Image 1 (tube, rainbow, N blue to C red):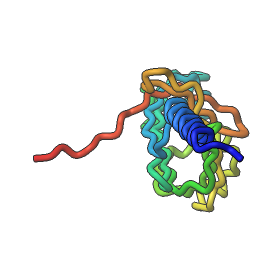
Image 2 (cartoon, rainbow, N blue to C red):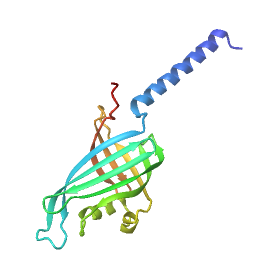
Image 3 (cartoon, one colour):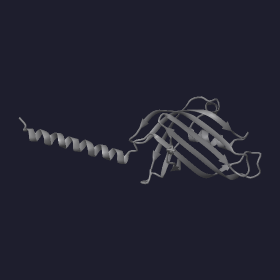
Length: 181
């Protein structure tokens, strides 16, 4: 039979272990399901056959928003040779693996502004690993993304699309909370 002091020591030890585990979990794994990422890339894309030059430098922007069960991807492609193109996908989170920060999403096309010989469309078909008819017809698109390499200040992160392995270096935009009046 254990003494009262032994039982108390056992309970206090378990309380300490649980506290330490919880503290470590909060430190290393973000407890929120809210991410706002702004990503930018310069790329050389082949121009449509009607253009004289073979490729042009373009700026590709991606905004990734995740708020609880809501998800959005906003792409914008701009260059000096062609009108800007954009695509917005919206949907919801199906499954989350917090240990790896993997998010399985179900997304649908909500808006698009594409040129006849779209550069952005070809890029997205590869990055999202979908067919053109799936994307353009607004079918539900299963996507998986992973947040990697979040720096200590939580100002930068790497966003990876699975299975295409497209990688974006992104700035984490802090959530803007309403200020009291």
